[in-house]
Image (cartoon, rainbow, N blue to C red):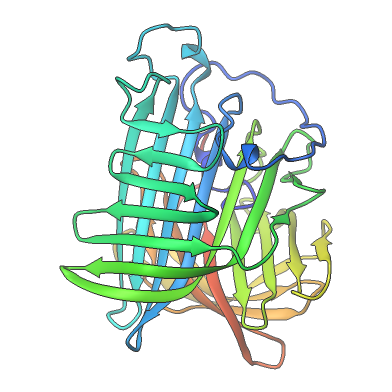
Length: 357
């Protein structure tokens, strides 16, 4: 969930390596910037997640760039520059709407904190995370994403147009029935996008809008949860919508939440029990046989929305890095009157098999 936000994908990484200590409830905290835009190496899991919608000469694209950091508790006392104190993972994808195709790639590297031996880095002062030649960096108030993959590349710039959204209780976001299941979490919706996407050697100069999430936590996924459903949507009127739920093995909702902000009003934070996801249409992956809901009715206090995938085939196989197969892709948002009111990303995990930490 932009866990993605609820817990998001990084929760997949929480149990990598070492002996896990019992998670403690996170205290309320006043987030401080730009420091909290950077890495928090004392926390077990962390991710920076950018998704967006872009156009070029009548063509339409979705894109996703995500960096995860996972702390390995058992190696923290080691002094060797080759000790893997953290693992850094990166996922990137482009959805070609016209071609109805998803292009994706992934990277993994260890991080010891000694630049001379590391293939990855994550600054604690501001957003500046890199994994070899992939990076997400904040410079002069703008974010720059660079990805060079085998079949595609992207070089995008993101500029803020609105104030930050502090999710949950001023940035402390509850993710389960146990108070320890929480994260520090903020979002930057309605980012203005410009730059270039390259597919199979063809360069497209694009403009569009994007959404950035940054989340860090000590928590583990509740043992009853098998996965989550999450949306982050930029509305055409400038509003921003987040909604999510954690699912049990029977498909029931274990925990839910989200937020809504109109550009001319305060943030409205949804309370537990106020968000309902109801599947409307399914798609089965020919690659894995996994069946995903690709059209949803999502009830929130803001409105009853319909969320539908722009392209059904947006499943990502990350078994070479985080170990999971999940669905994440560009989707359109419709209000209760059936009007197209925005677009963003839908993420669904735990449909092929339950997430295991």
